[in-house]
Picture 1 (spheres, rainbow, N blue to C red):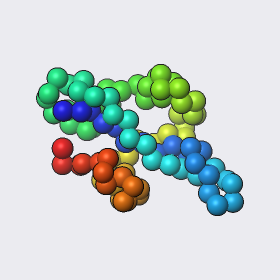
Picture 2: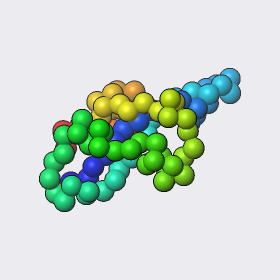
Picture 3: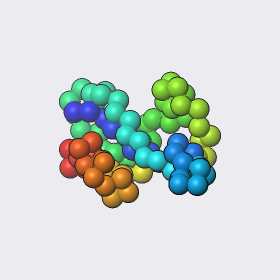
Picture 4: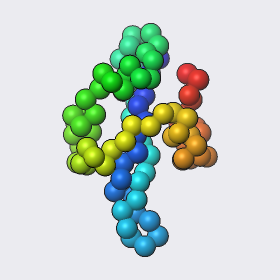
Length: 89
């Protein structure tokens, strides 16, 4: 069972005027739980998000990164996210 964290990052996109805007991102870490279901809150609290983003090569201020729930990710990013996000998994 894949372990996935959902985040919004301010400045990862731009709006129609070229100003920084937020964008959602799914970070899939694979089956780090060896098939066991990890509650989302426990997963989020166990991850060093700034270190994970740096490892992924993303240089964002930690204050610009917000962890969101799978449901919020699906609601905010709609059709684009439906294929990626399964809050019931």
